[in-house]
Image (cartoon, rainbow, N blue to C red):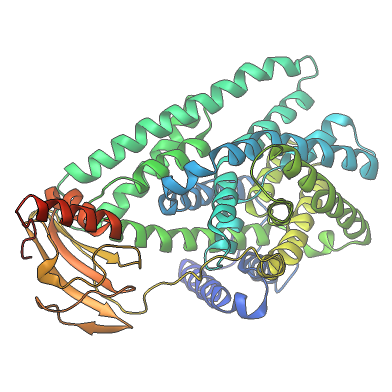
Length: 511
């Protein structure tokens, strides 16, 4: 058990204190210039056996279980927040980085591990597989509040969301090869295509089932819809894994489908999953921090060899993998350099490093300690310099803005209506139009306008300005019609008005 000498009440108290410390750490991580995952891990190490000795924990199987569940939640939230239109534009490079890039990274790291540690080739390739993928939790957290160019952010997020299955497949395959000498590596190829194909197929299918179920089921409480969505994420992973497919890939694909569908209680689902993903991330990194013993980690041997392998990963393996994978694609030299540097390692390699321990491999503790050190190095060196590198290379985009005002966004299941939020950009046709001139569909009503963080009461003669936030109550069956009105561009709107005028009619109606 995690606590040997604490009672239930003390366990609950300690859990609360750990979560509170995690939230505080997340708040101040940007100001300190240190990625939050490093601070979460340090909290775990501080509370562990080699630290203050408050929690005595060394169960790799429990850590692995918690890590897998947390990764499912984090991948699901990341997929929900990803817009399909953005992912589609970077699908080719992201998939190449998630497959060929992971293979190349693993192979180059394996060569370095073989030379540095004097281990067998199979053990070296297992080492490379463990650290071969970028980490979704680390990348999503690093890019969430930074104004990196949309193309680069989408590439990194799509890659990190889809490359975990490749790393898991390679890790489990090399463990099997080490344990079973007679097994041929060529027998693994059909298994690879089965895992990826089934993960993609079930992700698409279960994502559509989840979206339809959320919209059609009429639950008595709005708080049940977010729980329903999380249950589908766990169900998707477990069904796919049971059929020996890639559960992580299925979860991310299902989340993409759900996140890009029209959902009832959409904002409640998104907000709940964002908070739940933070809790999963805090818990996972603290547990992984508890699993490591600083006395074994910060030895001269591990530090020297870990630094050497980190250099191989950051300055050789990752850049070569990125430049080869994006060969012939429309990425500038600066963009390739940035993608190379932003390939953060995080929870996935540490979780994968528990697999050799559970399997009882000979050098498993060495693997875990060095992988842990590499993750810390990657987070401290790469994670802390991402923003500055983007500025230096002039790869920043428009500043990410979130409204500071707070208006409850709701869906009314029984009334079959919902409140939607729409930010008016400069290119929209509604800019400069009075409310009564905009052809809103029937069964829709402007509830509020927020301009420069001030609430404005809507009335017929008020003029819509760029950067306004509109809050509109609309019948669900009129949602698509409303979206067409709000998303019309200036030129399209003028052309339509001209055609209607020439036809002797004026199609505008009052809201």
